[in-house]
Image (tube, rainbow, N blue to C red; front, side):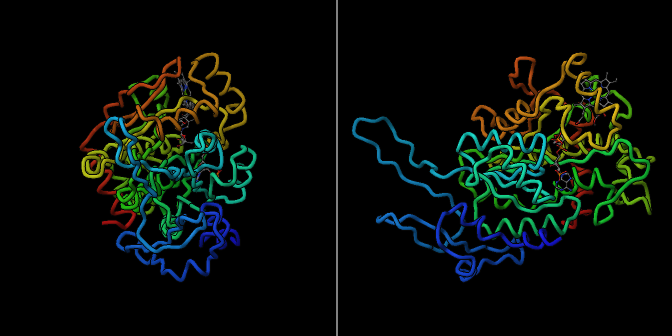
Length: 400
Ligand code: NDP
Ligand code: PMR
């Protein structure tokens, strides 16, 4: 708790890490960072710019990327008017382990990204970043518990206080509770898997959309991690219990198990199905964002199945025998296995590869690790269902 409280404002070191200035937190607050309503407030952010003499000076302005006009040398063809000089800023949820951590490392290694590791366990995330060899100047850990909508809102406020432009958002965190006999719930009383994996990310993305609109980065992207197991047009997606959102009656009832069911389709609780249903919601949400916002904002919305990363913490709640047999089963029988490192490179590609800018797409990789645009199942590509999930979700998270 103490750590959580300590993180409710950005640490002086997190700001210093980035700008390497001697401006203290006290000085920064003089410039009136207003965070009372993250959707509406026009935040005045201090910008540190290099002066001619090489010293750094504090300016006040709205968030913009540092840009420079490049003067063409004589005899050159038509110049690019502007070039973004700064690193890209990417928020990755659940970057303290598995796919999120491997992606953070892959991006950090390029030297072109600053990674905001949005994690529920600060110490674990710091240790993980260190152990992965991510250089200090390439990341900032910020507290985010997706199982609490208050925490999501607090995270967005804290992010605004950093006064960084936001270029890419990766919704990666997830929980999988296959052996649970009874449902667990988020702070607001939603079944934990759908509450965390879908509703927490839904609110987070909606609240950060304005930041993304304001970014002048070359390719702005929102990536929501999906999975083969939510797609019933595959063998893996046909392993029971199968994903099925039904007529969404449980979601409409608030997934709280009091006035209805904790399951989206209104059925009895099943932890494995709740996870797969949450992944369907992730993939539907990505497409609905694309339909509503891609044309207007130019933001690329994408989802992916990174491969079966059978060794991650996702399976921590599974029985020990499953954890023992699952990796060799995926390696030698289904051949769907990928290492965390390889999966991280795949997600990093979706974050930054100039050839993966298509919006509304679900990416997968073939045996040679080449990306291709994959087909989603009938349910995971049902536009009408996506609209309904969106509308119910915005009521549940307090946006409508
Ligand atoms: P991990 O368990 O290693 O990573 C999940 C991350 O989510 C952890 O960092 C965890 O934090 C974080 N997390 C969980 N709950 C919350 C919360 N309430 N608030 C904030 N963060 C939270 O699993 P993976 O790396 O395998 O999973 C990453 C993504 O990949 C998921 O979206 C999953 O659905 C997807 N995926 C995974 C596949 C696989 O085979 N592993 C296959 C297909 C998709 P903490 O470290 O504190 O526990
Ligand atoms: Mg699955 C090509 C076949 C394939 C692939 C790629 C996966 C991926 N799985 C495949 C097949 C099978 N699996 C088969 C034939 C079986 C029955 C023996 C099987 C079983 C199985 C179980 C019990 N598989 C699982 C589980 C889990 O608990 C995992 C799960 O569903 O988590 C939600 C899982 C997975 N299989 C995969 C992948 C990627 C998973 C993890 C799913 C995810 O993170 O979304």
